[in-house]
Amino acid sequence: MRTRPAEPRDATILAQIHVNAWREGYKGIMPADYLAALSIQEREAQWRSALSENGLGSYQLAEFRNEVTGFCIYGPPRDETLSTRNCGELLALNISPDHWGKGFGTLLVQHVIEHATSSGWDTLYLWVLKKNTRARSLYEKLGFEFDGTEKTEQLAPGFELSEVRYCLPVGG
Ligand SMILES: CC(C)(COP(=O)(O)OP(=O)(O)OC[C@H]1O[C@@H](n2cnc3c(N)ncnc32)[C@H](O)[C@@H]1OP(=O)(O)O)[C@@H](O)C(=O)NCCC(=O)NCCS
Image (cartoon, rainbow, N blue to C red; front, side, top):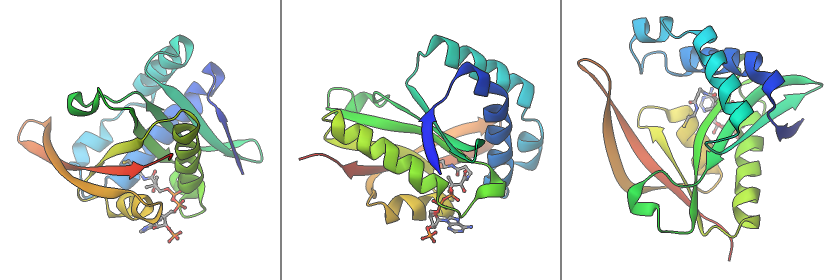
C-alpha cells in the first residue's frame, strides 16, 4: 500500500473512482437522480485537464499492487477568512468502494498531514458534509475537530446540503 502523485495516464481510473465513491458514499445524502446523472466521461475530461495543467493543487493517489484505490486533492486555502493564514485545505478524498475500510483513506490523509507539516503550515482544514458520518469519523480519528463553522450550499434546485469545517493544528 503506497501513495504517489497522480499523472495524466490516471485520469480514467480516477474519474471512475470519483463517480463510484460519490454514488455509494452519498447515497441517502444527495438525491438519487443527481447521483445517477454523474458522468464518468465528464469527470475524466476534468481530470485530464487538471492533471495536465497541474493547476488547482496537488493530486495524490493511493495504490495497492499497481491498482489505484483512491485519491486526494489538497492545496492553498479557498476560504477567504483563512486565506491570510498559513494553512492548507484538503479539497477532496475519495476511495473506491471496493476498497473501503482497508486504510486507504487514512493513508492519504496522513500523506497530506505530512505535507502540511513539512510545508510549515500551522493548520490543515477541510469541509465535510454534516451527514457524512463515515468521513467525519475518519477525520476525528486523525485528530481533526469541528471548528464551529457551518455552511449550506444549494446542490440542485430545492436541495440544500449542510457542511461543517474541520481543522487540524499541524507543525510546531
Ligand atoms: C470516507 C472514505 C474516504 C473513507 O475511506 P476508507 O479508505 O474506507 O477509510 P479507512 O479504511 O482509512 O477508515 C478510516 C476510518 O473511517 C471510518 N470508516 C471507514 N469505513 C466506515 C464505515 N463503513 N462506516 C463507518 N465508518 C467508517 C472509521 O472511523 C475508520 O476507522 P477504523 O477502521 O479504525 O474503524 C470513503 O468511504 C469514501 O471515499 N467515501 C465517499 C466519499 C467521501 O465521503 N469522501 C470524503 C469527503 S469529505
